[in-house]
Length: 100
Picture (cartoon, one colour):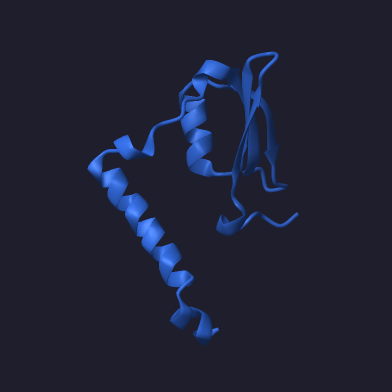
């Protein structure tokens, strides 16, 4: 089995409204570490043949998930968001498309 590349890493959040639980399936190491430190229950941990972690499925009460208003982000977070938006504009610019 080939390991996932950074481009293939992802985190999926699913909220069960009936059981009021949140399920997170992630292959992003930073997210795995954060959820473990926050005390989320590990439902399943999948590993590569060499023993390293491929992805982890976590479970927690629905209230453990919160959504933030992006207009109230701290200045450093706003700068990061602006940089991301500028990168998207650059990649979609007419001059950039004509280079491809």
